[in-house]
Image (cartoon, rainbow, N blue to C red):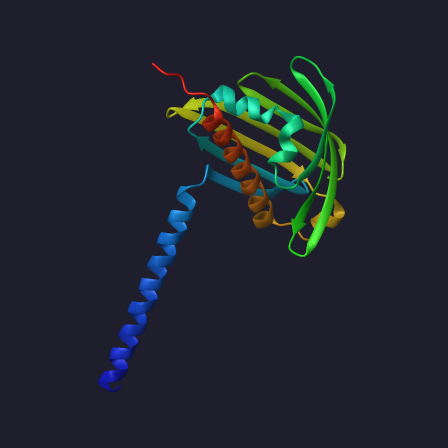
Length: 199
């Protein structure tokens, strides 16, 4: 092989390595601003089971308060269009959500009636009573961690027949990550809006 061919081959390998390094660096940089520290989705029981860990530099009480402020959720949850609180007790809420989920070119509207039980500021448990999805249940556990709040988010869901045609683990993870990022953004927005206490 002529010398210039070896040179071109070495140059090509060097360029490829550089591009891969840049891509890896960009991926790390993009991920470093995420509130999602861990995400795992797997298929189970005809649907999906997901476990995510969220961390953000905000008080646990504020994070909890944002996630039971149902009336304002359509303002910041990307796919939510309307929320109605039908019944509210000290530690339980019955709430109806309406919205749309985008799966590529397919837009799937949804309605879900859920019973939400909670123990402030430690945990929130949500169970679908009826809705577009065949089954949906979730649990959030809040803990003080590293001068902020860790939220362990567990979700079990079974999509409708229509959504099931296009859903997979990657799409479920992407949707849940987007939801968690919206949660983090709203909590941090409200934290920044709190009045500062002068000493």
